[in-house]
Structures are given as C-alpha cells and as structure tokens.
Length: 458
Image: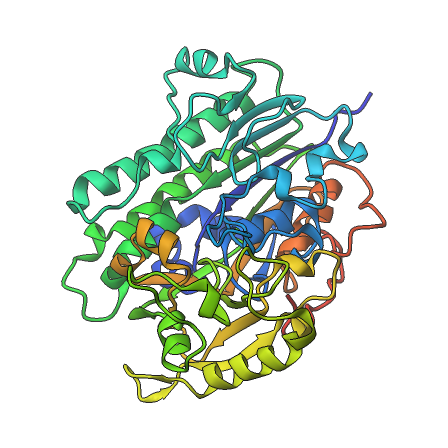
C-alpha cells in the first residue's frame, strides 16, 4: 500500500517580494532554495489587502463576496460598534470541514478563523482575538507541548503600545518561534499521530513591518543586521529550512503570504472629510451624532465607507430608496478630497461595492470601497478600533502583491503563474493527492499551465 500524501503550508504573513529579493540567498537561503526546488510566482491579494479576508479566501477557496469576511471585525454592526469576527462568520466551509478531507488529520497553528475552537480530527492552536485559556484542541494540547518544551503565545499578548523596541521585538519573535516548534512537534508525531495537513501561520513579519518598516528604507540609520524586519524574515527562513528537511516523496510544501507590505507615511481620517462636507455630524462628546449622519468610515481593513442606512443601523438616516443617490453624493465628495500631505487627490476612486463584488456575501462589504491614490497615505478606519490598535504609531502597511512557492512531487520546477488567495484551497487538495473540488473557482498552483489572474481580480 502506497504512503498517504501529506501537505505542509507555511504562511509568512506580510512577506514582501522586494525584500526577499533584496536580502537574497545570503540572508534568506531557504526562501531562495524553495524557489529553486519547485515552482513559484506572484500572489495578488483580494482587492483590499488584509489578513483576515485573505486567509478566509485561501482556506475556503472562495473570494470575500462568497465567504463574507472583509476585516477582523463586522463591517455593518447595527449599533455602530464593530464586533470581532470568528470562524462562524464564514459563509463557506473551511477546507478541513469539507467532505474531501474526511479521514485526513490536520494540524492548524495560529490561523485566523479557528477561534472559538471547535473539535477537529487532529490539533488546533487557534488565533484568538482576546486573551483566553480555551484556545486549543484537544484541551490537553498545551500539556503535551509543554513536555516538548514548547509554550505557544497568542498574538494579543504581544501587542505594540509604543514601548522600547528590544523587548517588543523579542516577544514577537519568540511567539513565532514557539508556534513553529509546536507545528514541528505535531508534524513529527511527538504529541500524537502525525497530521496529513499541517498549516503554520507566522505573523512576526507583519507585526514588525507595521512598526519598524522605516528601518528598511534608504538612508535608515539602523544597521541592517539590527533591523527588526530582517530578523523576522530570517526567523521565517529558518523555520522554512526545518520544514524543507521534512520533505520526502510523499510530502509537498507550499509557502505564501496573503498580503505584501510597503511604506506608510500617515493615515487620513475619512470621517473628517465627510464631516467637512456635512455628511457626518459630531455630537458634544466628539462621537458621531447618528441621527444627523449620512455616511461614516468603515472599520479598519475594510478600507471603505458605509451609508447610515435605515433598517440596517440602529439610527439609520438614509432610506433604502435613496441609497443610489446618497452613494453617488458621498463618492463625489471623497473623490474630490485633497490629501494635505501631497496636495493631490487622496483617492483614485470611491468604488461602489457592486462594481467589485457580485457574490451572495457582497452585503457584508462596505458600501464604498476606497482605492488610495498614494498607498503611503491610507484611510484610518473606524476610530474606536483604530485607536485601540495604535494605528497612528505605524510606519508600514499592507500591499496587494506578495508571493507563493511550492516544492514536492506535485509541483513542476520553474517559475509559476500568478496566483490569488482562493487558489490555495485547490492546491492543497492536489498536494494531498485529492482532486480539486468542482465547486472551487480557483486553480491549483500545481497545474502545468496556470491561468493568469484577471486584471483587478478581487
């Protein structure tokens, strides 16, 4: 009887192709080795580059207008206070919930959408958005990992608050190191039966790029060896090297990032522009007076604006019959708005969601999606959450372009075609020796001839 195919997935969240190329094989030997061993190519994110929708797209196999996740938070909270999303928000099942994976053991480490934890055939160290002791399956997994000297750390326990660099960077890198050690312990069968599918999400590149991107820019006074972002890439590269050592005739590996990264100069409050145009009114306490507000900025990550629609919001002022007119009025104001930092228009367009999204979950998207004219200046997002996540302390933010690379028997060596996040799911099925499901719209990246992604595909 032939051995069962196994698949390993490494997500290097926030990895930027330009930095991988800049630092080269001398500093990132395994990322470059992976390219040489198998296939690789560019990966373009969903229209708005953000972790949560990108990961939902990758592991459901559907775009945001099908799976319904456009941020870490609900885009249309009736009481205007966006609630944190979890796995229950997905309107399409994750790959490990599909019948094709029945009988296949999984190990899921630090993947958004896996919290609150539900039983899986295998292991799960979830991605909680708040402190909790109930973040894994099976419940005794921390004990099993502790016996191996592994003590995983949740992202919410390592959060930048403006403090000293060294302890923060050390904490972020340790969190990724512990997650990687946990995945390796599962992969090697040291905590129980070996998984068929192992997914490890490393987040240090993203976390440190947000805060220390400026160190990577020309003229930086920080020596390259001391740059926090390089240290995150090198950790991911070492982990990749350990995973490459576990490749064999029956094991395939896919590495990718659902987002890229680039410089940020400042965020601009879209609410300020709406207020200046009389479309948003502040009350005495400085928060919106919803009874006199037509439109407001959506939560961060959604990169959009919502109409204060009656029937959708507690104090909605825009009648559904007037939606089209109000949408056009708000878009016209925002497209004329000048960024004071550049003296040019802030947006290329304010795009009605219907132009980007046609799926059954399009109602979960903002009414207008904002396309910045200069990606160094971005919409701030809903002030409640943007203040709590310290966005004004950031020097880097996501970009649409990143990478994918795969090695193993199912990958054809050489440069592959462009990919989208939703191509990950059919690729994983192929890596596991299964036929891609007919209902999945993506293309397996293992195919000899890859179709190009449509221009502007979301």
